[in-house]
Length: 150
Image (cartoon, rainbow, N blue to C red; front, side):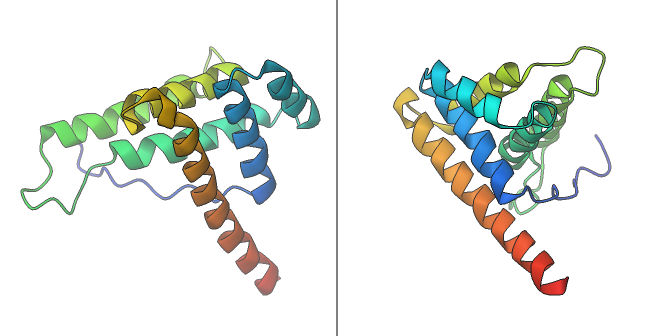
């Protein structure tokens, strides 16, 4: 078993990145290709994969992280889930030899929400809205601190 399974929290995304990423993911989830294309056209194409990977990290890692607060302590399955979460992010990484397209990354986030975070397919849009709200709250807190210390 790995000795250190604690990952550093991800750097907060900017509010604009949260809006762009979830607008794109939400449009694809709703099969609204025209809106997805418009969002993609309006945002920086080079940063979109990184932005979507940031969202994927925020969706996958909390779900697959080892639960240190469990009364019985972490078990082998806990470490397996954490390792799988990290592996999934590595597979999606555009820094590897086989880059994944923004559509592929967004579709993966949608599928993860469908299969892991919801009990019924209809709940996916609601889950994505809650994830966006949580990301926006974190971004606003982080970036308001940046403005007050600057």
